[in-house]
Image 1: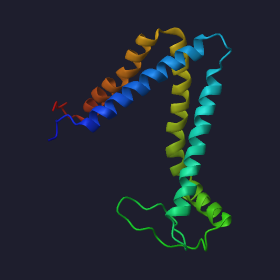
Image 2 (image 1 turned 90 degrees about the horizontal axis):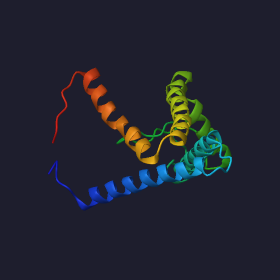
Image 3 (image 1 turned 90 degrees about the vertical axis):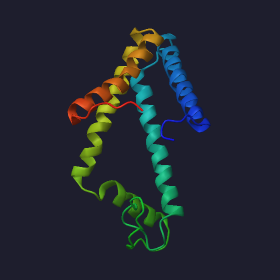
Image 4 (image 1 turned 180 degrees about the horizontal axis):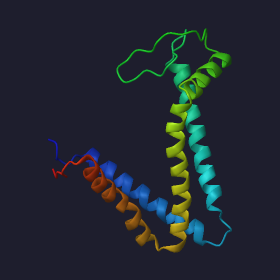
Length: 165
């Protein structure tokens, strides 16, 4: 049913709890150990890691999913790729594919992604400042309160009542 508890759901919940708890505790140890830790460096490395991971995913997509002849756009859910001229699979074709996917949607689309990314980067820096000055438990409760406030503001802005399962 809609509200039933499943083993997969419990495993996902346990994994998220473990991940969030270990993240907070490791952040706390890192910033309070007196090692000269720079939070801005950690945030930069985090973003660089995500960039590398996304690049690997796009390369794998190009290698395994883009048919010879290419696809200009990543297909939307349920759509077939549209054909375009990448030619055979090569580094040049990969470069053309990456350029199209990153810059081929116009400045407006790039800005739609850049603004939230900038806000997220600022948020990550603020989180390191917060974990430096708060106990780990207080930090976790305060940080997780974002879920509740998001739900409240979503209901208020969308003028929809909250429903409980």
